[in-house]
Image 1: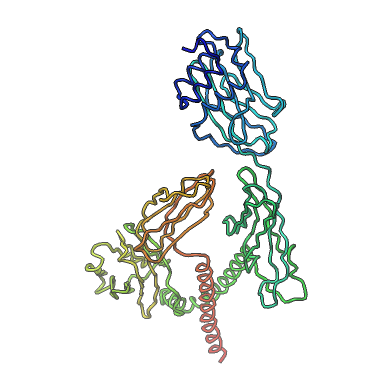
Image 2 (image 1 turned 30 degrees about the vertical axis):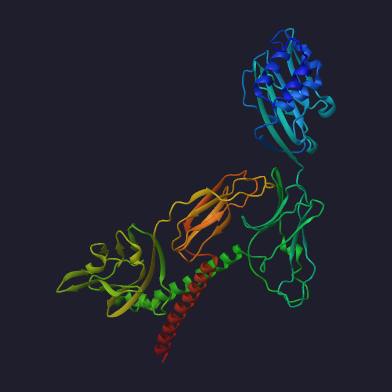
Length: 539
């Protein structure tokens, strides 16, 4: 077809013929010896080869993206095996578009010849002919760009790879901010700083949860991020600088950074471990005192079967024990009692916003134990253990949520209260792409959003590996929960989780305080009884 024209003329004709793919392959076959033209002649026309490369890559599929740390050795794996010996292999490179030959490997007169571009990459390139993979040693940020592999053997195959090389992030530095106004309660305000770079993010972590972060496109300015927390001794705080391939962390040493021994008045906040140790020691001391006093008291009131002791422990009217259960399960409300007297009367009451009823009545009449259950409300789902007073509820439902009160009557009445909350199983979250496209300047065209049917105390969360990075909950259960994954380069494993939230840190602390108050109240009652008995004996 093209016997009387040169390859340059052919390229010119094709460029004027709407870049037809068929003509391109005919030109390729012609210039590589398929139609009698010598293969070495193709290398004699660098301008022709450049034009051919440009024509073949005008459509260009999206390149595979790779990220690497500066100074490392990177191998661009093609995934191929057993490339034929007579195949011509070309690697091209360009910062925006691959247009410079860096590797040419072909067979000429039975001998394999491989030429490397030593002006640009010196001696840092290595080709694997068996797979076509390319290794770059001591890669630098200047090596970022598009790498294109061409394998020519009858047909023409192309692979593209876009490599982004990053410098290691700098070490973070934690310093103390300038003094605030006298009206501020914070006498020490840590600030974390780092030298900014491409795609660098600076973050504060409270234990393992990220609480704040900052990043800027202007890499000429340093990044500064204050730690906006009032009590710095309660948790462990860590500052991290990171880019897609490296990270650096610095842990906050508040004692070293902030001078708490200055002349100014300050408040000492003990850490989590110290709080737990103090609570445990306090509990041990209180239990020891209570045990001694109870031993003395029970020696006097053993004939009451131990119920008088229990009545003393619960006369302070403490907050009901809280229990949480999943709808459809079997729940046993354990009382912690053993050996309840066989002639004691046991009553269970149920109270909610819609009902206040007696649900169990067990007593001894003429030497026979009679136990009556409320079958209108709970049908045949209740069972009483007389030896401990524990109550079992089968197939529990959300309508069974409420306060359950146990009364044991034997001369005097002892009360125990339990607040039961029953939850429905949470729905399975669904991940979809957020509707609406982003701006063209944004490199990510997919924005995942996790959604779930909202219910009581339901929390929807995103996890990056095992770390929770965002969450949402709403009291209005009529609306679905929606939570977008705000990540620019989602290169980790992300999991969306819907769960029922029972109680937070504040609620736990409140319950510990209430428990301590209960222990003190019990101690006061027992101490009063002991002293009154001693006074009566001395009198």
